[in-house]
Length: 269
Ligand code: IPD
Ligand code: CA
Ligand code: CA
Image (tube, rainbow, N blue to C red; front, side, top):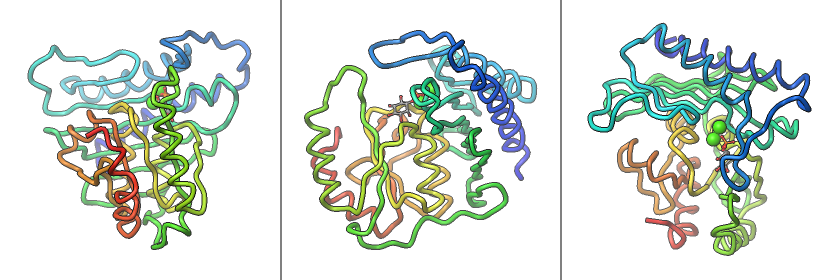
């Protein structure tokens, strides 16, 4: 395993321990609201501290872009290496004891995502990828699914629920994708959803209004597993553009084009 990825795995497992310890006493966790339907807990912060501490000790010169603590460098030139971190993706699920959430850590090197970890502390499943070296679930090599008819596909999705904004537009998309696939699931943790596409558990995934830390690791997992990622128009552009755009469509190469056909009219771009 790549040396930098190895440290990221250590950081993700430490965060997973923090998260798992907290699930023993979910009632005791202090929850605060960042905005409507957008929650953060002390566990998100403690998990992020564990990750940042591990990465900083190993790589004092690297930049950090983390959900709870923000960007470590002043605006202007991005450091050569930047760690993009979501310490707990799926916080609402976590608060409710609904076991679908993960730790997501990616490394961006001069604008290109090169290392990825998505760790599911509930099932102890570790998804990793290094650019050019494949994607893995624990030690097993991952490939996206081979299903080639959208009508047979199981798709994942999510939508911005924060203030109900865009819900009508989303309902149209929901209808179209439901009619054209064998099923739509909305698990509530985008990073793990993307890892499931890499693992072939989902044939495809789509969501808008995401943040770079929701997408960074998952998108590398998918491309390294032989899948495609882009926005709803199918455009990938560079990694930074994809992450900042926050609109993601992912799938195996056969289904990707079929999904683009349905979703392109709904793109924000
Ligand atoms: C959320 C999850 C969810 C997605 C939201 C994200 P958080 O992340 O990824 O699936 O629909 O847009 O904000 O807040 O739990 O880290
Ligand atoms: Ca997130
Ligand atoms: Ca989060």
